[in-house]
Length: 120
Image 1: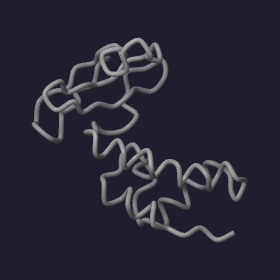
Image 2: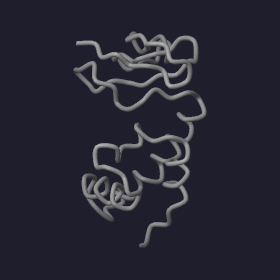
Image 3: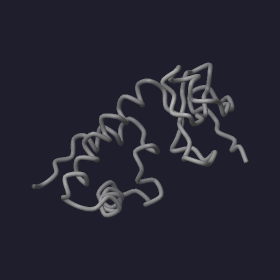
Image 4: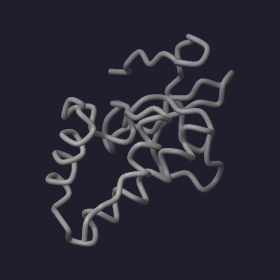
């Protein structure tokens, strides 16, 4: 079932489209929710139509990528397991566990995560 995904920038309903509309021929064989007016989009979980987070415009996508680089290093470097890292993130940022996903973050939350210093 296609979910109703509303663009936070213009208030229009995003369309579920093939990801080649966003990535061109370099698509991943998946789908994305896309607001064509704002060029805001979000991918979907593999094998479903559930969004991976919230729609993001260019600025937010850049911030989320930077936040992922910092966060992924935390668990990929074996300082803690992936799910332990997400629990830690929720506690540290004082957010609900279901929102402790960079795909749900706004720009301020991305900056907060990027500025965190992880102890060795």
